[in-house]
Image (cartoon, one colour):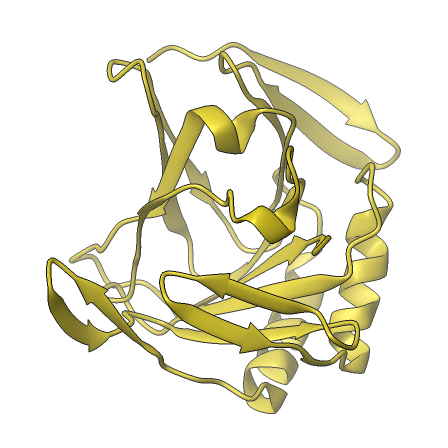
Length: 206
């Protein structure tokens, strides 16, 4: 699918508006500088309380193909795919990044889901971030650190509408409006060698 891209400047950050139908997507390819990406990746990866939950797919239980963690304000609980996560208190680096991405967002985030893709075999299946606690039109801020991974989108009703983008280290993708109603997204497996990737998806739990 050919997607129109409006290239703008927002402060000192390059901004690309992805004009997909039924979606509101803003992409900042170089939100963080490479040196800061490396520092944040190392610190957050080493200090995070990682977990690997089990999920049921096709009637079979298996380990989730990535490591996850959930941080946020006190009492913020998130449930998806039969998994319930209770927020761990913000760490200083996570709080700093939250404050920075909020400068580009219409909302104040109160939680963040961390996903650690250790290699190309780690992945995220097709889904929409449409759980009830995220509200009617969720705003999701997705910050990438580390290895580049492909981010694919497909329309939930118009099957011929698909799109993909390479999420590089330091990039920030802001999804809002009706995006989660009409689109699914995934991070597929790859046989290529890729460095570990840390993805921070900032959210608002209602």
